[in-house]
Image 1 (cartoon, rainbow, N blue to C red):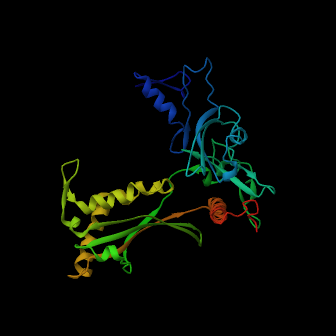
Image 2: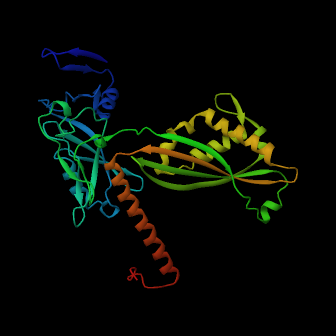
Image 3: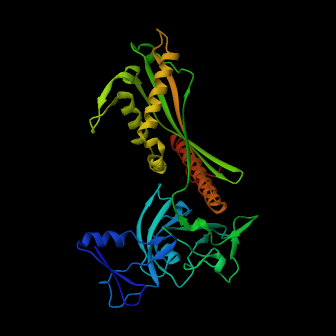
Length: 353
């Protein structure tokens, strides 16, 4: 690739020897350097190049499940942008919708929109790789300290208000902290366990998410797997792909944590858990537990591997999270009620009774 500075002094020409390289650069837009947006355009796309717009990846967060349909997609596209809005896909059971949008840099960013009969629920737009922008007026190109406008406000909930523009418009990795620990549980010994001829661990993997907003903490816990392996795995060496040796227990724990992690907890795969020394420390802790807790006659020990992820939230994101949690509670209760009605062969049209 070569870079040439054009005569106007602030435009640069990038020339690629491989077409694939150019396509990758265009696909990963937008770019910013120290918060300053770098607008990159395809020279072959048009006779005239418009640098007053740029392509952004936008995540739609907080849209109720009943609106996550093909019928609502045209309306959603019109809310997020006027030109060249492309649907990319969904994640987290359709909870998050991703769009590629040409953002008009001459206009304020679109923060989201209200829905509901009373227009009391706000659906957020979050922009990937969004650099500096004004928290007062929502324009890219200057920051709050250089703006002549007053902040724009909106209702946060029934009792409080917030600003329309703020850091919550950025879709960026959240600084998180992760705690990992093994807890010994009361043995749940059944007939199968009584017949074991060698000592084994039974480990339940539990993820706990703590969302912290000021002094408010919301938590959600989910057990994703329960597995067992012989204590002998702690001392059985295996050869990995890079020709290093490790214990069989290391391989089992790593597989059970990472391969069975649900999609909505995919962020854990990028946490310190994925570092070899963390898994190795768990194996060493298991060795100590085995020496300390297993007697000659013990053949079974139940443990819980608890993984706690804590991440901070803004007030706006906290309100959106509450809306999602409330909707999920309603879905679970409705699903449970339908299941009971089906099992009892009862009328499904009177779920409110």
